[in-house]
Amino acid sequence: MIEVSDQEFQRLIDEALGELSGEHVKNIKNIAILYEELPTPEQRRELELRNDQTLLGLYEGVPLPQRQGMTRTFPDKITLFRLPLQYQASSPADLKEAIKHTLWHEIAHYYGLDHDRIHELE
Image (cartoon, rainbow, N blue to C red; front, top):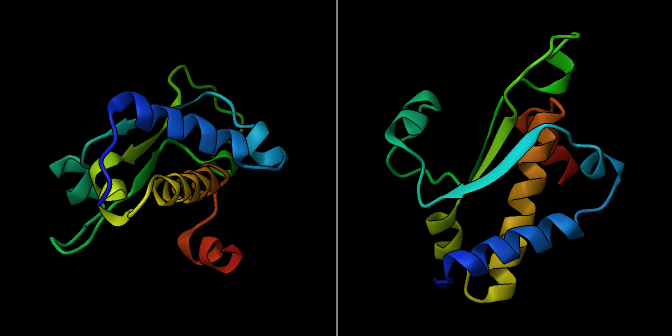
């Protein structure tokens, strides 16, 4: 496990987001990217996670293909969970890579990809 300060974690998020390539990443709109220490009990319940399951990130919103012209005043949200990400990393480079991978995964949900399709692309 590696521990970093709040400022360092945010810097790693910013760097990882900047390194993600492709027009899909550059074209995300109206989405907040945040981090929390851990998922809330409500989030874990909604996702039906068992106690032994880890959540690294979460997309909350309406995926683009499901919007069908609807307008929204609130942004969608991607939340990265700092403690699980730190726990799996053994170096700052590992942590940055885990953040980058998790961001990519959650952005894929924003575009409407399900877990099966995301795993195919990975």
